[in-house]
Amino acid sequence: MKRTICAVLSSVVLVSLMTSSISALAQDNASTKAPAAAPAAAAPTSGVRAEFLNELKIQEDKFVQLAQAMPAGKYTWRPADGVRSVSEVYLHVATANYNLPHVFGVAPPPDFKVAGFDKSTTDKAKVIDILKDSFAHMRQVVLNMPDADTEKQLDWFGAKNTYRGVMLFIIRHGAEHLGQSIAYARMNGVTPPWTEEQQAQKKQGEKPK
Image (cartoon, rainbow, N blue to C red; front, top):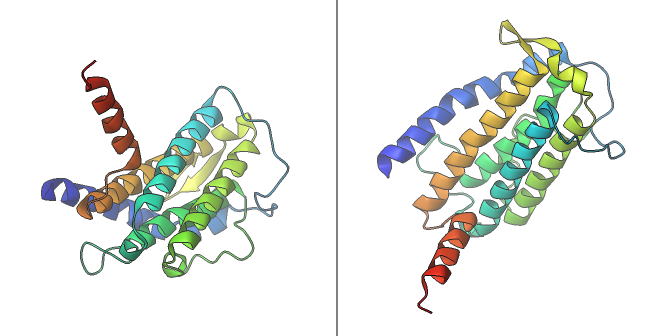
């Protein structure tokens, strides 16, 4: 278990270092557009955006389930000094959801400030609401994005990338921190709800007839 946790935490470090500099990079690529709060667009049924939105929904559901399962008293728990706490990981993910669309030219909500956002609250209900809202923001950004824009190029850490490439990064970043959050839950005796459900179904199927 310790080896698994260390692997998860060490992989998170690299992603966290990258995302910490995204705010400055985003400013160079951002154009003046309205925030993501726009009329609902039809969800794509195929292509890059559809695949992205499917993965985003899976991540959202698991993050929210995990956040709901974690006791409120564990939201300030951290595995070691200098490492993000439970609530800070959730809010770091929310920060990315609000801030990363800058590179697509979409501003975050007017009251959002990157600096210190992951430490802005440890209240369980507020953290969960923020998580949900941040995923809604990211989802709306991609719903409003034309399919052709996925191949647009932009500067990305000293190299060229596409919107599609950044979308892959967004999913990878979320997956890194979902793994981290699962490890945090396990270390505190919390089984991920989707695993608990699978185990319950398996036991039900094994009952003698």
